[in-house]
Image (cartoon, rainbow, N blue to C red; front, top):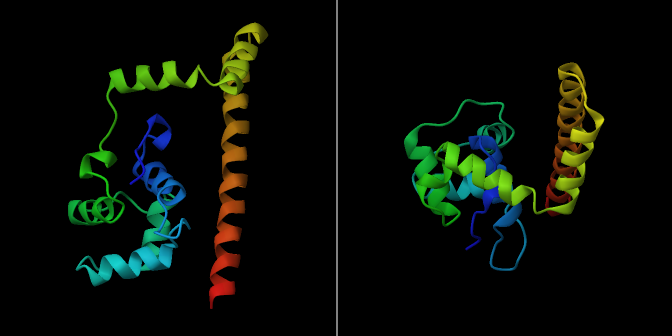
Length: 150
């Protein structure tokens, strides 16, 4: 079972995505959305692969408790894995993130640049755009993998 670290994210979608990226099947391959949806349904938690995909991408509201419990159980995590983070957890995540030289470099550049609030907003917007591009690339890879398996 993969241990969740502080990079699992804050939202339900981010944490669900983290599980798909870090928890693998017995052969070491990532689980597909379709496989997980089918397995959850088989275990008594009826969910479509489309709905599960929407949850992973943050396009659906957080699911009811029974779905959260079923997803957590499938991935070998306690349901609390999906709980909101506290201020102490935020501080711990920040301290841990600053040990990464890439994150530290970006933070130092932001400090040295003395950007206006608008400048900081622009940087955040660029990061969010890169996140969207990388998520789209992952989605295309999953789609390609699904087509190959079909």
